[in-house]
Amino acid sequence: MSKETLQQEALRLGRQAKAASRKLAPIDSAEKNRALHLMADRIEARSDFLLAENKKDLDGAQAAGLSSALLDRIALDASRVQGMARGLRDIAALPDPVREIVKMWRRPNGLQVGRMRIPLGVIGMIYEARPNVTADAAALCLKSGNAVILRGGSEAHFSNQAIAAVLREACAETRIPVDAVQVVQSTDHGLVRELLQLEEYIDLVIPRGGEELIRAVIGSAKVPVIKHYKGVCHVYVDADASLEMAERIALNAKVQRPSVCNAMETLLVHEAIAGKFLPSVVAKLRDAGVEIRGCEKSCALVPDIKRAAEEDWSTEYLDLILSVRVVRDMDHAIEHIERYGSEHTESIVTTNYQRSREFIDRVNSSAVLVNASTRFNDGGELGLGAEIGISTSKIHAFGPMGLEELTTTKFVVFGDGQIRE
Image (cartoon, rainbow, N blue to C red):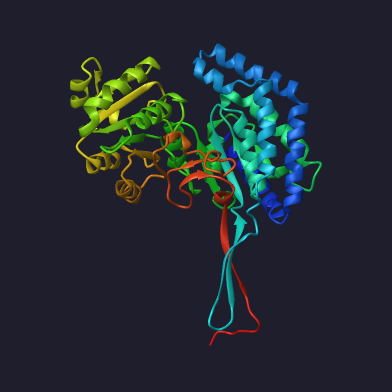
């Protein structure tokens, strides 16, 4: 395609999405929920079609020599298709944030002033590998009254196209505009760059994938972008921790699913309990297949672990590898988090209430936990029902982004004839 043609295609997608968003915004919850249930029914009914299209992606990925981990992220089976349908129904069951009056107050002149939730407008979603994101993102955007332009990775091209086609078929049977859900058909990266210039038509871009993808999006975009470069998450085991609890939390945070952004990458241990705690927890982590990379003090306490390099402290492994550091106290732990962390997720294990409150106050990550695994920084686990991603930006959302984070508020004012003097 020529550059001009890419510009034209991007403009067409943007204009169609903007027009659809204006039609979608006033549609009531009942009709949006009906569309979501219909989407779920169609996903189930077209399972064979979806699996056949997914096989094309898997065959291509195998031929390209992609890793087994990436193949697993691309793959669909009957259970995963059923999971997509279940996810659509779960989102239908969530409260609709649109038109909610968040706050209302009365001014001295009698005016009633309030804030009402409204959709952002058009969301651009750029993501890698997992085809189920196509259904999840479309559903979250639809429920929150937003049109969405979806651009999945080329490794799942046929799967994404098929899922989006089924979702659009369901929209056509309701009052939901079909172009409220659009998928980019071209695999040309130039089209993505053109979409990222459309500040007149796209209100927010959410990239979901590796740090390289996110930095590339931010580097090209005129449209506001939700950032989440990486998840370098920490668990700090305090001097007053229950060591049994700390072991359970550390094992869960590292081992339960190491390839995700809320998995622990660094374990910080107070020097007062390190001699007792580290040999035991390292043994259990090793039994689970974890490679340990420790600071000088950690290596002295557990002599056969690998010495950590400087770059280890800021590395998101997404694997069964863990950095371990012995710290002087909580101040030292927080200094480490501030220097090497990514403002994603941090946890303290302690029985000291005052210290836990201080940790919460001083650590500025999107989720700060006390006596719990970092793996809980997830929209479903935190009660949002579902999430479109996790933001480590502070504007306009911080942490898991559910339905409310896909809205903004406008002021609504009720008077009985007041004029400004």
